Length: 521
Image (cartoon, rainbow, N blue to C red; front, top):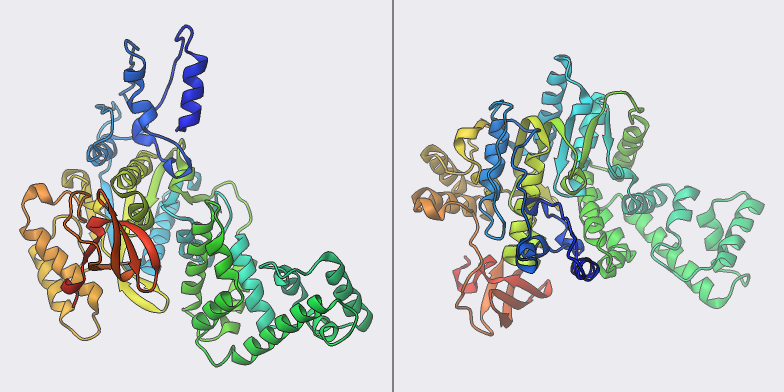
């Protein structure tokens, strides 16, 4: 996990006598997104001819089934040194792969399994739920709180994350204009150019007249107490809040919340932010909108969140650990749950779009890290449907699920679901569903893909999505991308295309992830 500069610096320090000892596992290099370069360890023996390599191949943590499944998965990567791991702990339990109909069903069942183990005397400290991205913790947190299951989040709990607290403050102030804490949090978020002196005058007027801060801001906007620019800013803010207050009951709450985040400039603030955290913050905001979709009114959602926060479990001796896969590196647990193994989530679609084949290999290394955190039991799960912006979208099990050897796996599928090498009965079921009313393009794509997989040669069924390679797209050609929609090819470089999308703007994507526009119905 060293970056290029660190490696070059190390070479300079050791250049005189070459006294250098390095320890590492190329299969666990998972920080490429922050500059780590797996090539450093891959070319070490080339840079230091004659270096002695000591292979540490006995694994003292995981059982045989876990180790064999993880080794088979990581063997799909081409850029690795390779090793043959073994263990003397016995085969143990096979990996359990479960399919559920949606994310809430997945969270309910994971919680139910944990409760079952708790009744058997299992130590909660030895159970972890490891997710690919931070936004995935929300449904598990809410479920654990609902049933009183003690847990801890490594990092920050979903509703305590800064961007979620900001968004909630907007909604709280709109719903209750006298909420001074909410006003203080958002009056300058995003930046509106209101300095400390202006905010102090607002507070002084509010205290003097015993009125809410928002009302004081409105009064000052119509007075000569402040400079013209500050008055204009406050006037625009108060008018915007008044308009939203009038609209809050006339729109579906999720649609209304999205409108507020967009019109306030809050979404744009994070879209323009160049920090590595900004994509995750935007994903969390999307997950917040998904949470609001379960409610008929804005007030009902805010009341629910208030109850959720009040119901937070107090720290106890035994707690389930909820964390991202990146944060789990170096840790170990008796039982590991790995939810959300669906294409687009894991492997991450953003990583595939930005990094192509190299990104896919790093995602596979991340899956390897997740599997090898477990000593005794691994439970992988995926959901067939996810709700995105009010619409149910069908999901496809991660290609990583299909890369796990069947002899090391037990299945626990909801009726009609499967993975990997598709059973004929499933193909028929999906095809029948795809033709019925209410099943959209997602089901048609899934049924078509399953049919193609079931008739494909064995060597072509290792992955569920096309691998990077040569293409025959032409400049100016109209193409379709599952995430960005229709667009035109503007430039080409090896296996990557620069495409001007009609709605998403200019993006660089891997050629194998787009299809010709004339092939779209």
